Image (tube, rainbow, N blue to C red; front, side):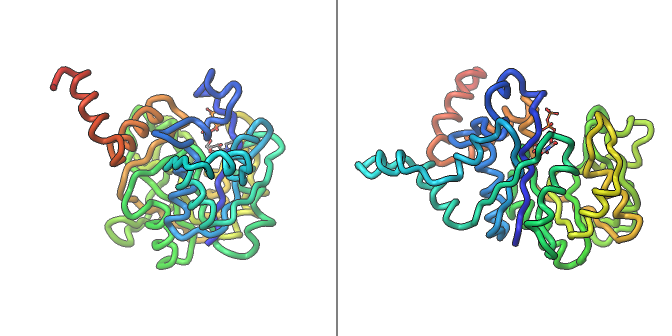
Length: 287
Ligand code: UTP
């Protein structure tokens, strides 16, 4: 399975931390956010990953590259678990990079994958979105695609106050208790105009027909080519489905979700769970 991971966005919402480093490299527990994203894609069965980067994102490319310096240091009896796990992860998939020349929107980022993807369906999972789920959300979506043979977008119920931050779907007929036909989509609607509370949450299985749809999509908000708008174009000619995934999703491009992901994943880690729980209890006065 091929996976495309857009990671070329600016990260305005995470300034000043993103002034000199990509938001995808922000630490979550003991590894950068994009490590979790790649781990999920690989756990879902991806063996070929294309990360869409841009200027000032070199750190991501270097992170997944071999490092003779660290190999030499670690040969002398150091065992750093997270480093070893990175090596294992890198050995399970081929990681490729393509650059988006300017951050012209998520749709434009996905378009950069066209040559690489060829004629196959492919997974898209955002470089700044961490899902905590079992099975992985990417796997849930891929399984849904294999049943439906048309594009599938992961959705979740969003709070009223958040509706205008999301691409929102207009649901059509229900296929089963998690799967719905998509009747239409709208990018970041005002609450009053939103056709539902089901927000597109950053994991997709797409088919190569998306590329023509992206090309046919004029720039929308902020002059960016939005993936939601391209999906809307595609929906006119092809069935499309939404899948209500099970699990929790964090947009680590926002400070609060980054913090939540960090806490949840720390508490899930065998090495840190006990110490972190004791510390949180002490801090909150429940010791
Ligand atoms: P966001 O919607 O979080 O936008 O992108 P952003 O530009 O990265 O963040 P802010 O608004 O400046 O804070 C969702 C995903 O799409 C990628 C981002 O890297 C992120 O993984 N993206 C976005 C691109 O690859 N290229 C773009 O032009 C825009």
